[in-house]
Image (tube, rainbow, N blue to C red):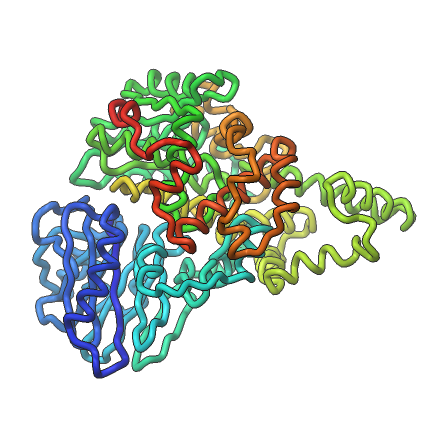
Length: 635
């Protein structure tokens, strides 16, 4: 697990020193991703760099950038390929020689042997760049679900790339806000979904399941993994006919294999264990197959109704493993908020990102370098009641509303808009709003959901098709900011976080399951509940999804003041009126997430656009220095 950077030069006037200096600056800004080693190699018009977090083969043999024995193929690599040992054996049989025990070298030789087709063979999470001297081609690759990040942009006569957005912002010191993407962020709370555009003009993300080929100045993206194409009618019908017990056993065997694969490591491992079903199940399976493992948990200090520590403690006790819990307070939340926004490169959409960062830091201080997490389970198995159950109810409600006279159904609709605080009295507002929402992202999300729904065209029930399509679409939509949160907050503390539920073999089976196994009469995540019953106490195995709630109103109360935004990003760059800001701040406790979004945007803009120091912004937000002696002592 590492941070990577590099460039491809299309000019003749640059020197090797210019290239190495630029790539070194990008690597330095990502040093937290790889504190164990670093390297830069200049190869004519191509320069590659890496900072390394040593996980497998801790020796110097894992140094990057890495080449094959001929020096004609080079790689800079971030991630883990969990089936690298099997691939290595196959490559040895084909005549390849290896100088290390790393999966990095396996990825390089696999690309050399099979080309882009090797990506179909990889089990894991990865983002890397491969350079072939013979053709002069640089290929940027990102894993199927975008667990690991990769960005690129054109700058003068160069194409530059890096693991994190901040590395590219320091290359181009004339940042321009992408206002189209900002609208999407404001509406959906995520960007870099279905479009490579980011919040910054001219900086692009390699999309999940995509590669980008760079040759002779031409940039060619290609999609190598497309979730709707993975839906298989025969497999769906096989699961529909099968005995439920055999279905549970099939999913369990794949999940166990996925978790075991992610225990391959030469450094200590742990798990993130909130006390909920998903993380507790991963912890339980890992504990059965790993002699020493520690679970980590964030406790919401002073709020017993929100604190899940008791569930995490019960799970750890039943499994006979150690649990380390960190008590989060409002003071620490405000003190660390600007730092987490800086680490994430984007305005936060999930306030609990602060907790992820803190517990990863605690894990690192306790000697653990690899963590396993439960992300992905809710999207695969129907865990978001507020999203999937609500969608199901609304499908039925819409059908009934269509049976009512137009005036009555329209009155109900307008009343709902008015209650939500929308300008319902505007002329034709009710008919224009849906169009406006879709117009913001050029109908890309609407088209994506339709493609996912059409993948289940063989399902007779329109209701089931709609929900199955929503579940599938969330693998590229709803999941994206959650994976960004996981990567940035863990790597900011030099921790690698692995995601067993997003093994593509498990995903392949989950998306074929009939709706009743995921969101049906039995229960939400019914399949996982049946598996968990074999590993965990009943009270945890059958817990309903509660998310990771924080007492956000109490935490943010000290910031409910308009002067916090004076002479700041929202006014200077976005041109927001003080009156509008005053109105939103005045309603902060009624619209807490809207207020948090505005606050996160202001902090992000000050750090990245106004170039204010992290220390200054931290003092502005919390009235304190970002270094907290008590926090450092605890961790």
